[in-house]
Image 1 (spheres, rainbow over the protein chains, first blue to last red):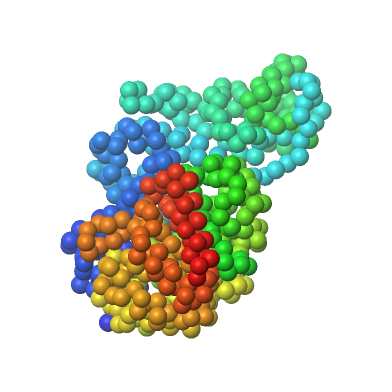
Image 2: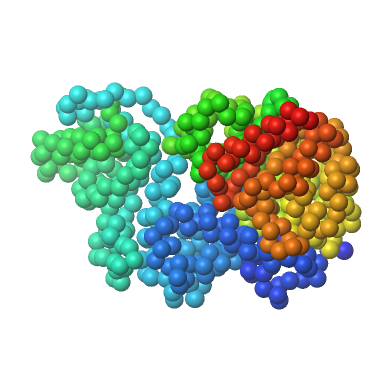
Length: 253
Length: 271
């Protein structure tokens, strides 16, 4: 007698193989079993493609369906949350060695898919509400801890991902990375900002100093004593004010 | 707990904003899938808070794989428990199915109706109930393929699980109809053989007709006349219980969705 676990593994394998006859064993349902491969493809496809609208638009007439079929076949998803399906698709895209897939997708595809996914990831990331005071003037940053929005990250890509669409599909990697600040503002809109490397360094220094302005300046000057204190202070103030106007900096404690 | 004579609606993004503006509908509670709403921040969390202020909420699970043989996801059940506490959720329900082996396939797959499956389900339902600290209701799932390993009817299978696991039944009326056409059994006989004291919650929905012999439970059409008749019969048989309209695909205007909610209310009133 076939055990329940064997039945489930064989049925799941049959579905992962897109309902191909040679994987249809005698102890599996005989009639209509292939329908489950179609239902699961449709379900997973609709959950994944909504997160990657431009990737989908670029590939729907050629290789998109193959991506989803191969993802279902190769990747073992363990998150019960539907919001995690696009992330699992991305994880698969990064590690797959499937030669057919490698051959058809453009070199930038993973980076660009990540860029599309990060918008959804930031949109649904958990809240971590902190009280804050709005600022009256730029100088308010100087003596207080800074309060940032709940959900943000900095990502970097060696392609101009913000320009990619059906018509612009770069072939070569850039020599230097583009940095993007991605954050959710107080109205829950997800925004992207291109950052210079020096702005990335300032934000990193701020985070490493518990978002305290004075400590951040002190640390930067300790590491780079050749820099002019006034200039660093002005750069950080201006950056914070710009981020405040964009909604990444909420205010001060 | 919800009152018996209540009507609910599965919350969908398609009509969420419009529904916020709607007053005086017959919707008395909302149903959400934890897998689509739990552990989220931002707009999604604010929306759920907003609706919870106005309506009681039922959680209808999709991915727990009560019938599965991969290890039961204990951390996920603990998250559901937190979700239940956070939103003071009235009831948690899940399907009699499995969602994949060696990984999740994100759909409800058919189980063989036999003793080994019952034992596995009972064990996992009891563990789930122990962690949640409450009884759950299990749903009779729709299925399109019959396992050759089955040894009994679906109603015998369900009855044994209900008895041994000491859980309740969420009776999906559309699934009874869909399965009765797909597997040529009498839907009324099925209902007659379900334990009378276990039905605490019902679903109605529409389905798609693949061909004369195969219906697919898409929740993508209006509720069929035969399903309304079965709902009426079920109310007479089991008494009136909270009943949810599910509409997940091919979603029409909110006004049309609410007409079907009104219709459930009418059946509750006349039964």
